[in-house]
Length: 330
Image 1 (cartoon, rainbow, N blue to C red):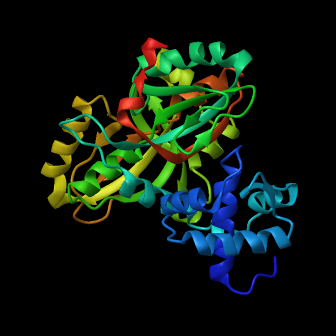
Image 2: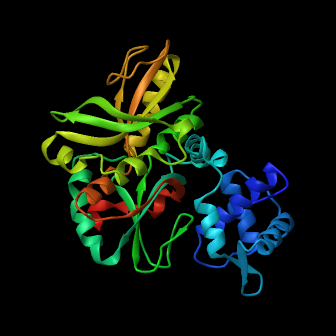
């Protein structure tokens, strides 16, 4: 794009990302507010300056009094952003969403991380039927979900025309709760976990978060590498899961946090290993404990296995706990 500095490029790309997540024109003030969600502090005046640059390059266009929309060129720029800005993005998103998680155990309120999927209106009922066994088998972080119609919002997303939005709780809720409790958690891999006789057996695929620009779950779902439906019904299959590590000294605190989350209907912990011992054939560093967390998008994977395609955005936003309902109520 020929921008003068890497810093300017990064800010412009972030503004483009904010605009791409909205179907409505956005002004400088709203953009500045949403940039904070990406960890970028940019004042309203500075946003206006960058918008002017993007107008000149044909990436954005005026809409209304002072709003902006992306042009086709701007959309293409978001899709083909420089690789150097994508490397490590997944781990950055995990850390950011963990920081934004602020769940109050006593009041049962506060922002928690979510995955967002968009299904076509015509196939949403079929998707619900396909997802039901996964929720019933507990192959999810929580049975709390959110549904929105076209034009409505799910976190920072606006549901596209002709679609229904579906939000599931993301496993990063555990990272966020651990962070608030003072437990440092190392998010190492996203992967596919083989289930044998209803129990976790071993990882058959792993993607290091630090080297991936996407949520590994999105990649595995798109590649049709899961068999969540079979795992839910027969106890034999391949599901989405994540591998984390914590210091062994933090075990008591971690167990308390997990119990409190479970009491609020927020689970996700599948296995907590022993100090320095491998978990599902994954080696664990000295004086650390391995943890396997269920992937929040397992029910969506089951829907895709049943032939219902979705546009998925894993680890993508936060939603207030009070805005969620039980899947069984749908």
